Amino acid sequence: MKINELIEDFEIWTTNEEAELLKKLSSPVLLSTLSEHDQFRVQSLIRKSLITKIGQHDPFIVANEKIK
Image (cartoon, rainbow, N blue to C red; front, side, top):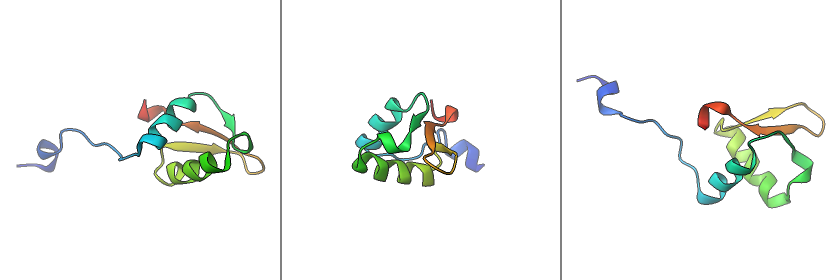
């Protein structure tokens, strides 16, 4: 039996707060416009590759299209 047969669906685990934040980020948003709590959540989503950061100084963030 192959691993692909065992794994039907691969999904990255997210908390309820992270899932709500991903819904908000369907279009690019400046990172500085988010609250400090949301910025902390965004950093964890960036590490999980669920959000893309665009730019260096005051970057834009947007949810990855693969996730939708």
